[in-house]
Image (cartoon, rainbow, N blue to C red; front, side, top):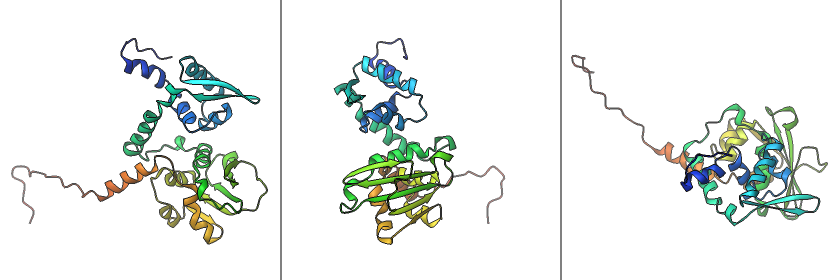
Length: 250
């Protein structure tokens, strides 16, 4: 654990929250993940050993409580952990406003993207009278992460990596970057579809409703507002003073 060697509560709070991976583990708990494997799906590049260590440390300091749920442990935030919610949300909105889309190739992850889509899907917008199955095909994802199925039925959503065997409602063909840009609010669906970077195949009625079904990231609205404000700013005009003896423009 980090030790800054200061009594300041900013330092002591940062010793807990500022440790590598800890903010993301807390984010997963805030998003409703309670089982170890579900938490790990939100931090797929974190080793299981390190995740277990972080959960144990958060439990020791009273941020997380562990209980037995059926055959597996469940982890939930305590009141102290819940007080981190506005901090996590503020950090996410700050990143959306000031960091934006400066994504490196190693920051694109089809698995985490689909997990985020699954847990934030607007279930109340899906038709209640029928099952909706959306297949996502990524042209540039890792081999085992190129095809996913989102199955929504009876008010719940399941994410499958193997064909669930149901009739398809829609097929979304995209690069990981294009769908990530839409999900994070960095680009509009119409833009990536017009450019051919993303295609939606299926009945027109359902295709039109796709984005209202999926919604966007919790921080997408901040990113979209920032983009809009930047595009509306007038271009900067530099006031350049001519050098002495320089000829004036005609």
